[in-house]
Image (cartoon, rainbow, N blue to C red; front, side, top):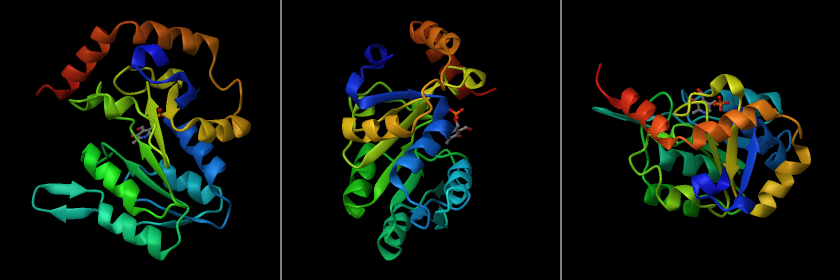
Length: 212
Ligand SMILES: Cc1ncc(COP(=O)(O)O)c(C=O)c1O
């Protein structure tokens, strides 16, 4: 999987879908009572898991303007500083707004967050980006835990498989709290087949993007 996706093996951790990785990354980085920040109205599972773990959840509103609904990066940064947050969650592209913040906005966000604050970058819909195969897309970014899934463009939602991209030290911590047999061998075999057929995946993406 790492070779097919062009991701260095030591920066990749496979687990049972993006949701499982959200829970895993939260358990790795946050203690009960610590504060996390997410956008009100974004993909809600992050908030469910954060609250379930006893974290304090702060949710700034979306940025809204005519024709624009987007996670408000300035508001996320301000909340992270004001509330001494341990982690900020951002879905990029966002669900449900579909808004995509570009790479330079993501790097600026990372720079503007406190050093002690993680950025959890949920890229479940990253395969639908026009630049999905870019070099940036395959890179571990310091202070960032990137999450990907084969549930969307690859159509394997029911088989439960995804992966994180992060620095090896972070992945080593995640490995310690991970359920080691979370991904079945049947799922791994199916993932290999799908990843060996990028044309099929590209067709799914094109079908989703094409007007009815
Ligand atoms: C933004 C986002 N992240 C994660 C998920 C969950 O993905 P998975 O099936 O890999 O757990 C979804 C599913 O709808 C999603 O929209």
